Image 1 (cartoon, one colour):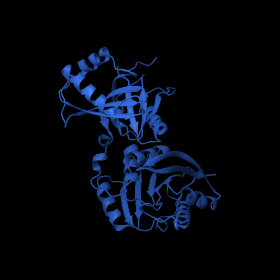
Image 2 (tube, one colour):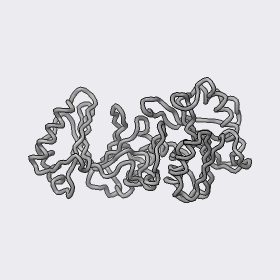
Image 3 (spheres, one colour):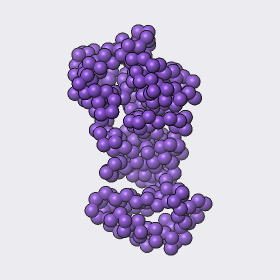
Image 4 (cartoon, helix red, strand yellow):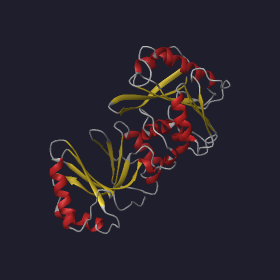
Length: 339
């Protein structure tokens, strides 16, 4: 029988990624295979509440989560004095001060009232606060409440510190991680991003599989290639080229894993030309694909264009991996394989 940790855990992800997040939690051995944690929805996040934690050792390895930590108290309707006492006993022993942040979804709780209430009650119990302190989150979701002491955030995941430059409209690292997790890169494989942008997907392949064989990126935007080279310069397997991903000079049949955050027209690309662009990219992926075992993960907000292109390639099949909101825009990730 599993021995569970003392505190429940809370993990938050981009909206739509809770299922992928749970798959990674099992992969990191935070929870048992058959566990069914509670899924909650915030306006801009999915929240997973895990009461029976097998081990929190893999928490700082998590790549899909935006932030995660110990849940010091939880319940519904009203926080009791006894709960505040228990939380206060833990928090006043902290060596560093805390920074309280309160989010409220639903009509039961008022965010500002609860912010004032928790600050007052915890200060009365000897807890120190500072604007530069460690994050202490109070999540109010309908009539439920959860107090989380943050122990890790997305920027602390292994190798994320390699990323030195940003590009407007770049794919968030946690969403790139969800895409990569859907295709599970294996040791020694060759992974290619055919429109690599700032290099986020390639970096996340390395983050999940440090012994990847080769990482290759292509982009027609010279500025994007410059950013990607900076962000990937500490990853020895990575090479990035200023070249059209639909017309690479790769040898036939050598790529194990294809990735792309496809241009969809809001910031990059053009909805009028997407069908032709997507078809050209898919045909290049098909030419360079290594059988058996090749797979691709493709993200787009222009689903009709992608499906139209896929229908012209009968040797391929596809399924939706997840739907996610990125800066308010609904995008879908698709897993593509040979029939």
